[in-house]
Length: 240
Image 1 (cartoon, rainbow, N blue to C red):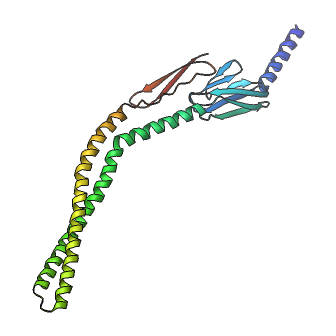
Image 2 (image 1 turned 180 degrees about the horizontal axis):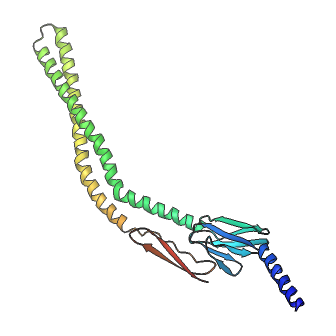
Image 3 (image 1 turned 180 degrees about the vertical axis):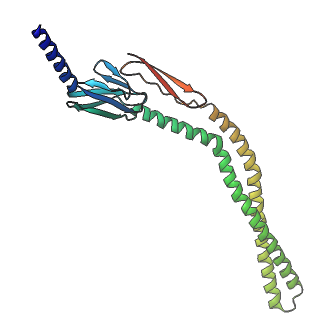
């Protein structure tokens, strides 16, 4: 009877000693929606697990990210948190570059023609305003010099006023020509821009946005989008 009693006492303290030697470990991952594997076991994010002291390695993977192996040591009676931050995979980085190029190309096709015409139109309209003012000024100068040389008595005055009249007249005609050219740019450029913008917009709408596909790792995953009133993202479910 005493032997059984001492055996039970010994077993109890041995069990307590072994229990005390157990450590607790939890894995935090970024992103949170990751698959965590320790050997053949699948761990839950942030949940404590009892482990013996020793060296371990967890495998972590999430959609769009590289498979990451994190090694860590566990000592006796330790409460340990192991952080694992995943990096985007090279294939996903290339996909993002394709999406950025798609977005840039679509915006350029939709609004590039209109933006270019607006820039040219502003420049042309500014020239129309400026050279219209110049033309009015040169016209007044030419009329003044014409009246002066027609009423001149001295040969020198006649020659001077005639030359100034001719110069002002030439300046007036040049200004009128610039105004006419820029008015044509505004008119025909607008028609051309409208036609080009139509076909460019149509082509932009026919562009196909790149899609990203990958083979799930570590387990049989099912990845599906989530959309509701509060949030949007992806839902991950997997078979253990």
